[in-house]
Amino acid sequence: MNASRKPDPITRTMHAIAGVALVAMMLVVVGDVVLRAVFNMPIKGAYDLVSVALLVMTMFGIAPVVAGRTEILIDLIDGLLPAVGLRLLALVSACTGIVLFAFFGWAMIQPALDAWSWGERSLELGLPKWPLWVVAFVGLLGIFWGYLLQLRAALRAEPDHSSAEGGL
Image (cartoon, rainbow, N blue to C red; front, side, top):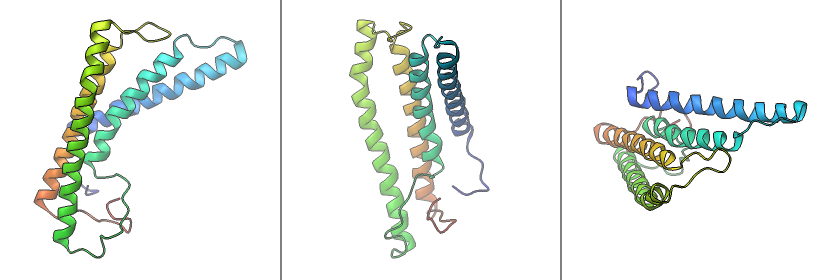
């Protein structure tokens, strides 16, 4: 992504949600450790809260990375290929990501349905697990959005190599 171009509202929102989840997860972990060590009173449900925050951070945090093409890139052949070759690699990368995450989504359907029909609950707080699957699917939609933005950028112009590290 070009440094001067602002991310779209969907990507910014997902990034903000992932950031809030990361902060919440860190605060719960630190609070749990301090309360356990100092007062011997751990936070009830810390395991479940950290699990939920980790899910949100992961699923909502991937989309901004994908949309901004800020993944870790290793430029083995970029210097050897012409611009058309780099554009083809960007297209293959975007299409591969779409197919891969479509497979992940397909593989997530049955466990999500099982959680709904069997009424699975979390370990400590007894929270129903099906809303977590909803969060995962919403995050997956954001990831698809990011890959569609990547695909659009690859179809419109050359990949952006703004630094010595390639696309970073």
